[in-house]
Amino acid sequence: MYQAAENRYDTMPYNRCGESGLKLPAVSLGLWHNFGDTAPFDNMRQMCRTAFDHGITHFDLANNYGPAPGSAERNFGRILKEDLMPYRDELIISTKAGYDMWPGPYGDFGSRKYLLASLDQSLERMGLPYVDIFYHHRMDPQTPLEETMGALDQAVKSGKALYAGLSNYDGPTLERAAAILKELKCPFVINQNSYNIFNRTVEKNGLKETSRRLGKGMICFSPLAQGMLTDRYLKGIPADSRVRTDGRFLTESALTEERLGQIRELNELAAGRGQTLAEMALAWILRDGAVASVLIGASKPEQILQNIGAVRNTDFTEEELRMIDRIALGTDQFMNAGGKNQ
Image 1 (cartoon, helix red, strand yellow):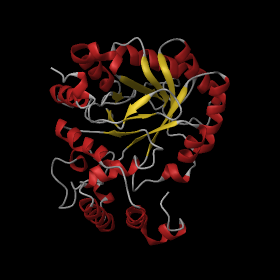
Image 2 (cartoon, rainbow, N blue to C red):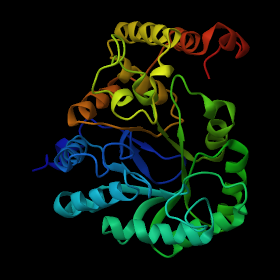
Image 3 (tube, one colour):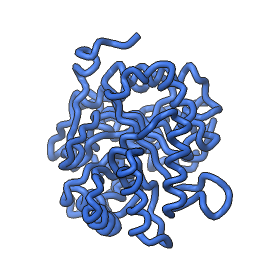
C-alpha cells in the first residue's frame, strides 16, 4: 500500500527543530480543515496516505479541529487504526488545547484542569497512548503562566507527550514561558504561529527573533494566507472555493483589487523562478532556516503533491526578497522597514 521506506524519504528534507534532537519534514500536513465530519472520509484517508508516501511524517491536529470539535482527531484516529499504526514510530503526531472546547468554565484557555483533561480526551479520540508534541494553543492573560507551563510539564512527565510546544505566543511571553520550562527540565522545542508573505506578525512581535535566539523551533500555519498566495483567485472566485463554501477564514471582501494586484505581481515573480505562487510562498517561509516546517492544508491529494514541490528551491536572491517585500508590504511599510527583507 505504501512506498518502500527508501523511496518515501528520498525527496523530503528533514530540518532540526531549533537545537533539539527532533527533526520535522520541511512540509507537514495540518488537519485544521477538511478532516471534520462534513468531509468525505475516503478523501481524508487518501490525503494522509499521499502525504506519508511522499515523506510527510508530521500530522498536526488540535482538540477543536472539525467541525464538530473533536471530529478531526476522531477521524484521524480511524485512519491511524486502519492504515498508519504499523508506521507509528515513523510519525510525529501533535495536538493542542487552548481554545473553546466544551461548555462551562473548564473547557477553554490555559488552566491545568483544562489542558490535562483535554489531552486525555484527545488521546482517547485518536486511540493513542501518547502524542509526540502537545501544545498550549494560545496565550491566556488570566491564568498564571507557571500553571500552564506546569501542566505541559506534567503532560510530558506522565508519558502522554514527548515534547511540549506553544502556539500563538508572542516573543516576550515565549521568553518567560521558556524560562519556566527550562527550570522544570521540560523538553519545550517548538512554536507554532501564523506566518506568510502577507502576515509578518511573528517578525513584529518578537516571536521569530526570540525563537532563534533561544534555540527553539518554529512551524508555521496558514503559509498560503488561506489560499490567497496561490493562483486560485486570479481569474475570479471559483464556485467550489473556501470563500464560497465556508467563508469563516477567507471572505470575499479580503480579495480587494489592491490585494489581487499584489497576488498577480507575486505570481509573475514566482513564474520567473520556475515555481507556482504556492511553491514560492512556501519556499519563502523556509528560506532562512528559522522555520523548520510549513503546515499545509489540503482538500485533495493533488494539492499535497503540488505543495511538496516547494522544497526543490528555497533559495532567494536579495533582489527577489526585496521585490517580495515591496509587493507585499507596500511602499510605505517597505521603506519604514528600511527597505530590507526580514
